[in-house]
Length: 216
Image 1 (cartoon, helix red, strand yellow):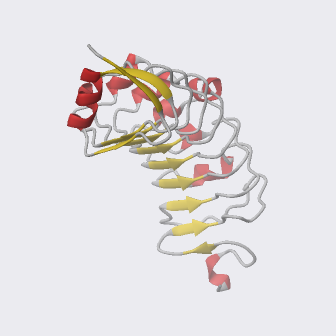
Image 2 (tube, rainbow, N blue to C red; image 1 turned 30 degrees about the vertical axis):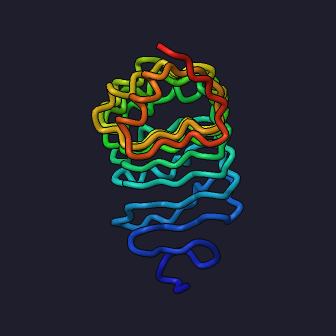
Image 3 (cartoon, rainbow, N blue to C red; image 1 turned 60 degrees about the vertical axis):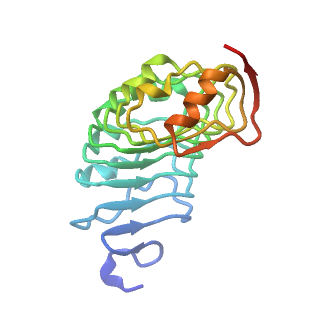
């Protein structure tokens, strides 16, 4: 890797992307300042919070912070142009998300919160009306609130491997929905709900689910 990249020992820059993944970074406060960067990969590090150094990249479009130790979303409002945010495999709680300013990310279309510590659905996420792809898999969610149907642009939803005991959400209220994964849950559906689920979507993942079907 050439020294003109501004990073000589770790990371790389390819097509306007800074890649500092798997670098054992604890705070990432020394990210090089390079103009016209649209994506940063900080996955597989030891980061506990959104680095304040990202403020420099106010036009950042994609940020990958998966596989870290993040417990807070402080500084997230400094990235108003984000369209894709990967926070999977961290230590985020429902409260941490609800108390954050994630609602300032009005351009966000993809949000991955898989493998965190969510016990309830953070209602603040319903303000992200541009979301098309939402990952909530491998958490501790017992139910989805009806408010989630405010996400009218949602196309793909993963809620697999949670603790869902009922599925009351009317997926017909998501006019653009194309795929949903509810695998690895345990809930009861009426035959009407099951028919509606399959009629609305091109892809439905139900593997490893314990589903009881009851007649209407």
